Length: 579
View 1 (cartoon, rainbow, N blue to C red):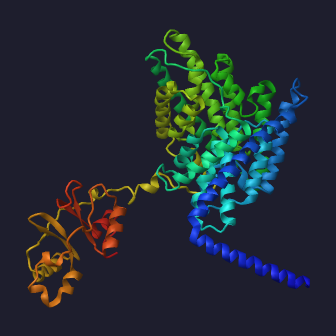
View 2 (view 1 turned 135 degrees about the vertical axis):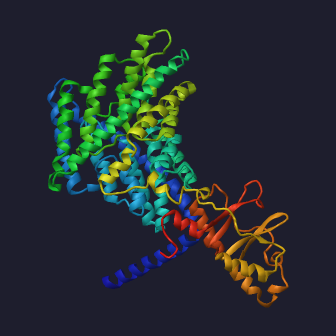
View 3 (view 1 turned 90 degrees about the vertical axis):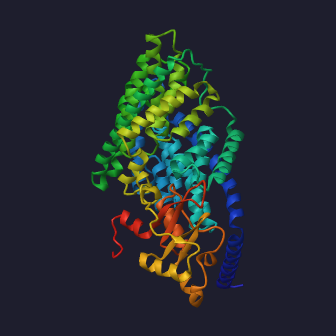
């Protein structure tokens, strides 16, 4: 067979197979989506495990043989940030930064699209960056890698854009489950932070992917927790005051971290774009300079977090690491290095908690526990204040310790940190980072209009009511006089329903002999309740083809509380009917 004929035959076979697959997908999309969820969980779990091992072993290999020398701690971070900065600028521009804002941008602004090159670039550049000692986290990049794998698989299989978007939180949850060994916290993070809705329809798929990824992690690396911590207990109720102080200080430090990072990143972004490849070197210089004198600043520092959790760090060391790591992370991230703030927030929280716990132990030694418990609570406190995911932080710390003893102090501290951070820095850091990149993610302001304003705000008294025993002709005249397309019909039982001009006009010549009770359909009728939103009111008006709906009691549907008209809705937003 000639080569051209062979190519044509192959092309026809491919087109036929593609058509058959698309026909099958149209009939079985939900089943395909379910199977794909399991596949994504397994693949993302394996990739994140590879990510963890590659970062650890690559870092050990780079610094091998130079343990006693100081110069590698300066040269390697600078050289690594320079090389990765060029690769990020030249080949992988979407792989900079954390990965969580980019994942949310893909979900809300890019129809769920994350390219395969971005996934590869994020995996490679972040691994190399962290291995060189830049003190950023791997968890945020893992989220983008997991979401990217889900996006690529969904698009390659021909899923509809809506389904591809639904796979983004699925991949994100699988990544967090494998990165932290916390499947429950992974589900909450995907819903609370990525989707922004704990009742999202993808809940089932997110749970499946998280569980599958966690199972792969256990098979490959065992079930060892991320941190080994001793058992903690609340020594005295007055100790809760110390945890409250930790929450207040944690909230203030979270605000300082977010504001400084956003301000400094804005400064870097204001420079000419052609200089962007060189910006990460600034972070490398800061890390290398501090690492020259304090090696513990290098890397994300989970080893030192474990030492703080077990009370093995002195107060001076924790204060020093808190201050140096704070600035090293801010400069490293804002200058454009690949890596996240997920892990660093846990490090900062552990050091802060250790400092507060040690200070409390010195002030009232007989009433407080060791600093390790405060370091653990501090991790959740900083996470809640910086990332703004309080539910995730509580569940994550519980999964790490598997001990209920710290739950109450953790909730108190987290709540205070979250409240202070939200008041002093209203916009979450991930949303502001996306905004700096030109992506406007949905926030609270997106739900402050018709989606949240309740019917009670525009409710008006029902001044015009039609008696159910009135003739249809009389009711038609009353409707025209009221200048409304419909009015409530009331009998001795209460509200019977709504009658419209169009319906009465259809009665025609029988209008004189029929009463409204004969015309109104028995049973359920379109209505609203006070706590319905204006958006729901508009939906129900459209479904009923009416410009007015009755507002009734939830306890008794026949108890009329008032009416809402389309004119009321328009006037609420400053639009007159003529406009």
